[in-house]
Length: 166
Image 1 (cartoon, one colour):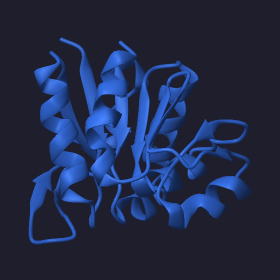
Image 2 (cartoon, rainbow, N blue to C red):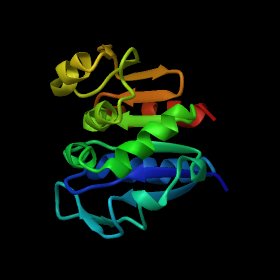
Image 3 (cartoon, rainbow, N blue to C red):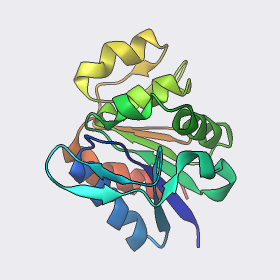
Image 4 (cartoon, rainbow, N blue to C red):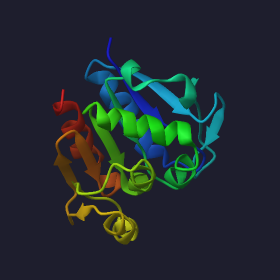
């Protein structure tokens, strides 16, 4: 079974983890939740989720694709070289890479946005542009293997576009 990784860190947006988690399973994929270490992580509410594997123990070869949910977790994800390296390696292998809302912050730190067309939450638009991205004011943008979405409300289109890459 092909595995999709979902990155996790504290202050994740619960909806941006749960919705893709189940929808990619419905599409026939396995899901692995990847954190900086095996631990329990807290969302923006009291909701928690367990990372079942540490990013340093995952290789891009192990995954069919990777999703970076939003919330404030991407600001924490980008602090871990093991996580940004995984993002970079997935992209280098041209495997589906998705980011929702503030997920673009982690993409910036993984150095995969320069010259790319994408979207993200409006408050990180300047961050993305300063990193060399071409920002589009669209709900979901697909550019090669990269799928990005602006907001939690865009999850249905985001997951469909992500799964369609397969």
